[in-house]
Image (cartoon, rainbow, N blue to C red; front, side):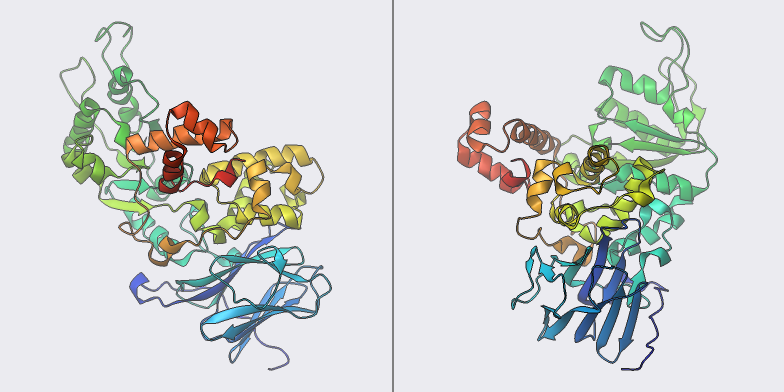
Length: 474
């Protein structure tokens, strides 16, 4: 090895997803002492040994089949740990460090690393991925060198990065966009990014289709003439016209009633809106962006959603994966939330390693929204002290001592057809009811079964079906 190896440059071009190789990766996810420090991604393709050592600043140097990573953590030893290839797997070995090396919370041993295993070196948390898509460009990337189309679209997940890279061209067109994903994954943030990228001068108007009474929805969306119905004391233009020249974001579009679906279809087909009680339509220029956690094709098959409307809105589909499937991005998300929740003191916030480990390992059933509320409360409870595991909700606390979180197989090929199928409206309501009861009864299956009038075995079936774990509620 040369005395002064040259750090590898940042990512450059993107390759087509189908040509990108799949290989092991190591992610520097979180510096607990400085959570605003950007994380990093390292491809291990062609690497037989990774040397992890203390340095003044982050470095990544490659010579032959060795990768030397310098990590700015004062709790690391000069040479702290190594990852060595053993066949098609890697093993983590402590290099006689002062503070030790933990794998999934236990001292590094003889077992090979598994997908989504977390490593704790000093106050730095890393994530090992056995087989994920490699990004185009250089194999080492500091997140400060990411060039996302919009800040909300920053990601270290290579396949998701490719999907987001397509949004600027779509945003500047008239092609409708459908954003899929579980509740709380940040679909509205993606929608706002699409509007930002569109360059449209009009407003971004958000409508929660599931939160407005059916009797009011059409007048709110399409406007009404004075006297059109009881209580219409003045004419209103409606939200569609308010979005003229801008973006109309229809959140949970699958909840639109049939009559409103027909009226929306007219807006898309004719580029005009007819207010309630009016006879003359008004031309509008709106970019439609919709979001849903449901399977719209299944809704069409069940006659809950119009097939012709689906055909009109499904010009481009992007799916936002759940947080448990993009743990690589936890550091990016934490930094963004800290800057939003506590901008004046974000730079002074820190975490204990135990708290950082719990955040990395928790499965986040309610996704980024749950992470935000968790962090908001922890900031208040910790005050000016480091956020400790005791400042986190009980379910998150327990994650620090539990087995590693589930791998994220869907990110190997993050295509719409391969992502987890969204739930039907009935299943979504049932899942939310089950979550509420599990929280109320602290994960007591017998108590939940009594409330529902079901056998305990049925509750366990639902837990498996809806991807829920009892430990998250105890």
